Image 1 (cartoon, helix red, strand yellow):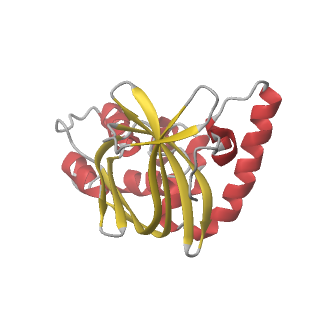
Image 2 (cartoon, rainbow, N blue to C red):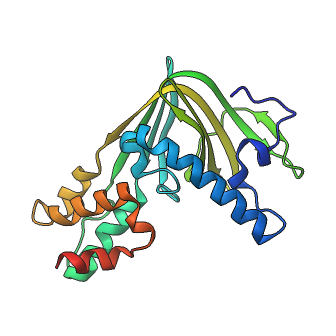
Image 3 (tube, rainbow, N blue to C red):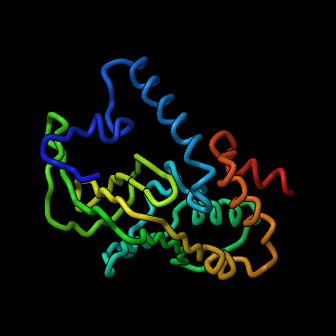
Length: 215
């Protein structure tokens, strides 16, 4: 996935572009969902978070370390679920509890930071430290070949981080934050939440409804 100045975002990551008609947008979404269906059996724990499961999460670390890219986030989805549960149970949570998730992209083959002009053309730029995670589109996910385009936010504007690597390793530390909030008394809610993420049932089920089903 070597990006050149002639590349256009509508071809590289078509779901990141709003089309002229609802019918075109629907066709792009359906084509992407078909690709995701093929990718998911190979994604392991990553399918809990892609696509779109980390939107608005704060980026704590984004750095290249030798041949790897380390991406550490404060998982806002887990934090929101904890706050909803606390509100329902009338509990007070510790301030500033973190729900860390680290994604290690291993054996990087391509890494670039890019901006998009008004015509959708991709232009490489310098490293930009991201503040917030917005979205991603998986271009390829198979054994030995993972390609993803991330949309990230920094100081009032978005940019793209494109990655091609051999593998991705997920380090889930959200349970540490969960224990800080609830100890072990509410583990069944956490387990159900993580399972719902993996099966994508949270897409059509509000977090509050998931809690109600367990009570």
